[in-house]
Length: 232
Image (cartoon, rainbow, N blue to C red; front, side, top):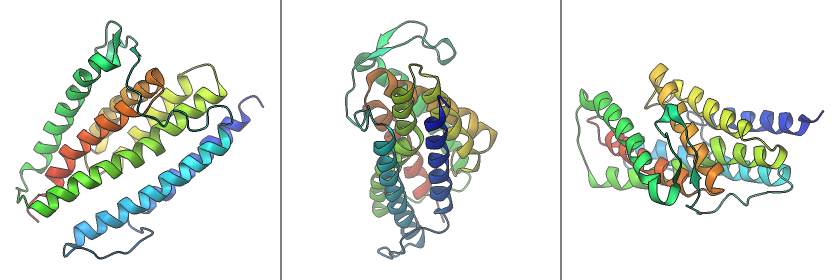
């Protein structure tokens, strides 16, 4: 019975995740603000995601009676604990070394994304590029709330271990990307799991949202700029 509350919370969050995924094809909204059907679809998907992120925060607030939403801040300072399999072999500081590790992740994801769409070709337009930036921000915020912040906060609220947050923030994010747009498949699971683990660490070690949001945002900027400007 010790972890009953954690089990219930996990079940609720997984259900929220499934609902959000289903909204990819059946969003809450049907706005038609653009001439492009693709941009309209993205708009409605992103707005639906923000609604689900808000629902997730409400659920977190209700369950995490001690911490509540205190991790939802832009603190960027903290100790980076050693993680040899990620190449972090000695302790560092997030405020000094965060970008170094983050840019490695961005470069890996950027190269994979570029290779994935290169055969399609590109047709860059201003409206597509601007909306890629906007949607990169909304998407990174939504995913960091649903996949990361909620689990880290609840783990810290209910346990003295980081394991719950690390496992959930890594595994759920990785598995979902098997069916993602980019990256996807087995490679998508592996690279997204590694990213998820790193971003989960950032929230746990800074007790803040800054690095997870910023690194994820820049990753999505790279991916969406390429994806939005392919030759359709």
